[in-house]
Length: 145
Image (cartoon, rainbow, N blue to C red; front, side, top):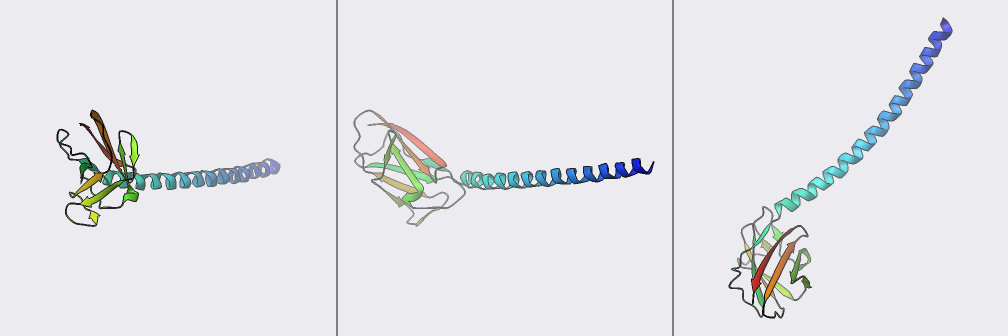
């Protein structure tokens, strides 16, 4: 009988070693998954805080230059910086534009309106302007010239 008890002890110790190794691997996987989800959550929270709305009247859009008024309807302050903003007119990326806060601030506070003056030649017909902020928040305006 002592040999049976000894073999049971050896098998028990081996089972403990294997289960400890599996637990260590699982803890590492859970830790990495938690880290990735936490990082994605931070990005999502920031994108939810950013929100903009184009407030032009689509029947009264001034052209030459194209003037678009965009209101910060989100919860976060956005720096007035062309590096953070993408402007597309009829699907074409625009670089020749200015951004001016109507309140005179250097930051785009929640509730503030920024005027975009986009130097683009528009033919008569339907057009769309789309403005992205920080690659996440965006709005578009369809209008006719």
